[in-house]
Length: 294
Image (cartoon, rainbow, N blue to C red; front, side, top):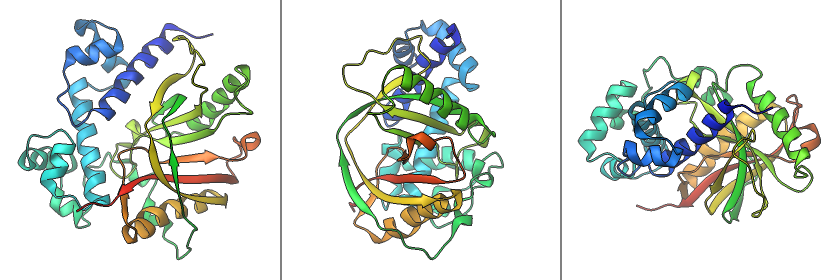
């Protein structure tokens, strides 16, 4: 049975999705409250109750974390990154970034380590998956897609993501979606820069365009914009999954004619009947890309 808590979370998820899509723009409390269908007076209290962060704290963190990704995975100048992340100038970005991560943007771009002790990379250390293995990479284009998702916060905590997958499978079978739709996971945050207790992972399924989803159901819905992806297929254990991501980001991408697009990467589950068996994975690992520009 769904509760009012599900409705609160669904509405705040819509706000979070809106912020992520408009992080480069000025964000007003009134506008976000309207997205959530709350009055501004109540909205900021509900947002903090659900997320554990004040609205302005979340927006600032989202901007700094997006800047960190662009600094590492694009060649854009810092001034351009500042604009893309909603900062008024390179100096404003530098102050915010240095204050949050305790390292200047330029130093981080050159390979410096983030000194913020709350960052979750200790739980998902991408560098530890170093390998000499090469993976075949295919470029795919996807149109806009409508999806349902269950969002897991503090996703490194043991069992939370697995339980979300179990819940999604039950819901998908009830809706007769399991056999025909695609199930995948998306890392909404970067474990290299996001505090571990705030790291979010979305457990997702594609939806037919005409399917109606009620607000009280245990899923939220959103649209994934059209995007190109670099895709590698694998069959193996968690170590192999980590190696594939390492290869795509740290080897293939920097030697390609592409850079990261501002969308989440995803893992598409090819063997849906064994989706909750985490000892062996059959996956398409996908990272969003766009043509590299100077």
